[in-house]
Length: 173
Image 1: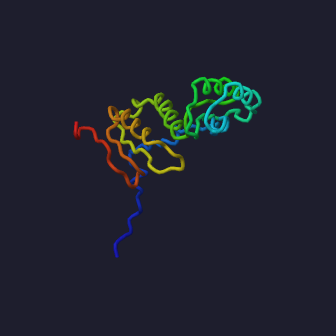
Image 2: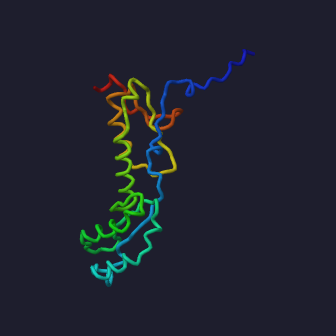
Image 3: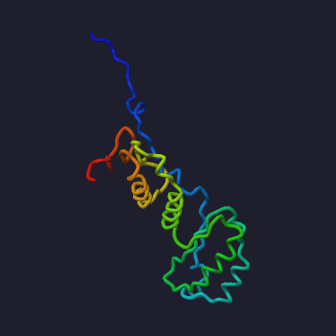
């Protein structure tokens, strides 16, 4: 019988750097403000009634949260309605965003990645982590690849033990 060789974790010993896009994900809690709840007969927004409802609303409940403002009813919402909500919510909410959660995550991730310094990854072998618990939008994967391509030696997607090659310097250029 031959001598047993020690197990070597080649992934741990490799020069791969893993980037987890969940680290760029917004950390604040999300709150929702659906304008449909303020529509007269589910169709129109009456300015006087809307102003009164906003003045009576408990805005403190949004303290430190991201407030998503949207309308799930098929109604035409005047632009000033969004402006009024922002005016009331801004002193409390960490951020006020017009749109659903998916649109907010996309915008927030774009903003976070705008501050990302890809030059720190010059000539590095990068793995963009693929699985996670947060709904990282596809646009974030696109953007991180775009940013890293001019710097990285290679870019892969997945987990270090099982990756999909995305880019390798010198191939396809």
